[in-house]
Amino acid sequence: MNRKKTLPCLLAAFLLAGLTAAGAANVTDKCNPSKQHDMEKLELISEWDKVFPQSDKVNHSKVTFHNRYGITLVADLYVPKQATGKLAAIAVSGPFGAVKEQSSGLYAQTLAERGFLTIAFDPSFTGESGGQPRYVASPDINTEDFCAAVDYLSTRDDVDPERIGILGICGWGGMALNAAAIDTRIKATVTSTMYDMSRVNANGYFDSMDADQRYELRRQLNAQRTADYRNGSYERAGGVVDPLPADAPQFVKDYYAYYKTPRGYHKRSLNSNKGWNKTSSLSFINMPILTYSNEILSAVLMIHGEKAHSCYFSRDAFQKLTGDNKELLIIPGANHTDLYDNLKVIPFDKIESFFREYLK
Image (cartoon, rainbow, N blue to C red):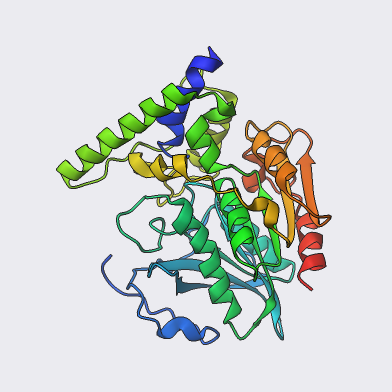
């Protein structure tokens, strides 16, 4: 396979494709005074439908909160059993195109087992969260989603508002860094197998796109806008490629092995099904989300697999960070999706010690 020719095409055909309510559920949350806000009425699933087993060490429930754009977000709340007093709290989201029933929920539940109050939330327009139209990504709104999670956690009676951290996986790692640059309430940030969604959308994988290719991408996406408006609906680009081509790059095979098999498939996951709206990447092309990451004063831990195709995102982003409370941890031999769910690879001991150090 000619990587130079193929990778820009993969960007349009794969990343844009998926790397890319009626009824009411009354979610009562006595710890959260913001429940009186006039939020969207959403129909929430009551049964356990995660791709990982439920822990008997934590209490689980669903909660809702809203962002500054009036969108209601739905989260799984994990609280350690026998917890007392005000706890340190962590908001988790990602990967890009996943839902809280997948990797983010696994991270949140595991950290709750270790003593933190955690939430794993569906970003705006995806999963059980609200927002119309569906299946849209936005560098602004999705960064705001993390800040809205901090709003929610800060107002819970059982959370110490001075001890709140965030954790972003894959594309939400970049959103987490952007949120940390904006929100001074965030005391510690972890990124796992991070994607810089602005960079990959504007430049293609491995920065393989030039200005002419970027113009052609814009032309195609804007033609799609016209077609969508004419049709009155937003065309989906498809999730992770299926069936898997024999000559697919290894990282595409790795995505398939997670999103398209019982290991990680979920019926609400964009990557597992029809993907994002085709035009979702337009705003990322012109909006670099890591512009002010050098001004993050709070602690940051960036984790990436040595063998991950995406490792350059973390290596380069880390070079821009300043201060002695920043750390890059490269996991030997690990690929991108190993950090989604491989409990033998995800360094939970390190993540726990990092949050304990900076959320105290």
